[in-house]
Structures are given as structure tokens and as C-alpha cells.
Image 1 (cartoon, rainbow, N blue to C red):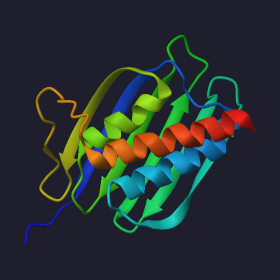
Image 2: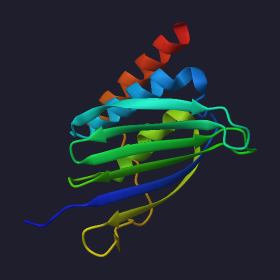
Image 3: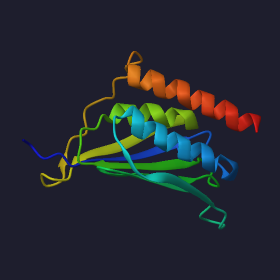
Image 4: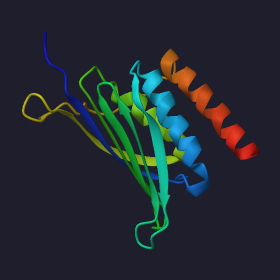
Length: 154
């Protein structure tokens, strides 16, 4: 059996980065992604907003049984951006991560997809294909929209 150690590193410019009031939303967002990817939470998601000038933004993460997911955002620059990192020793579909980031108003994405077990082999596929009929994504998108509405209402 081949060993899996996949690492997805994403840089995305966004229109709607999470702000301080979105900490609980981002925690739920990470948890929903873990479940949509058929992974298991090892330690619950945590998100904290940093208000330090020049470094303002959010850092959030969740430990999964197969490693971690980490999100960093910067919202005070002319074009806010996100860094999203998923490392797992199980199978990983980068497309699900790209779709999940759409909740933040993604303008563009650049990324690397690596096999860390086999000499950091670059697995980055050629142009991304968007598949809207993915039932795991559809389910995640519905949950994220519901969570977003609940947070806006409070």
C-alpha cells in the first residue's frame, strides 16, 4: 500500500475575508470541511482574530486525525488574502478546498499540491475543473450558507 502524505498550500485573494465577529463561523467552516472530506476532528477548531496593525487578520486551525487544516487571513491590505493549508496522510481532493473558500469571495487562487512522503513531489494538476454535482460539496455548501445566515442574524 502506498503511503499518502498530501499537502495542499493555497493562496487566494478574496473580497470578503473573515473579521473578528466571524471567529465562530470560521471554526464551524473548518469543522464542516473536515466532515465533507470524510476526515475526523482530533481537536476542535479554534479561530482568533489579531488586531495588531500591519498583521491584522485571522488565524484558525483544526487538528484532524490525519494531521491539520490551517487558515490565515490578512484583511487590511488593498487586496485581502487568505493562506489555507491542509496536510493529511489520507486522500485529499484539492477541488473541495477551493470550493469551500468561495464563501470568502475568492477572486483568484494559486496553489501547490505536494506529496510530502515522496520527496515533495508536485502533484498540482493542470487547470482546475469545477464539478458542481459533487454531493459532498453540495452538502457542505448548504451547511455553510445556513451557518452564515445564523451568524448574520445574531
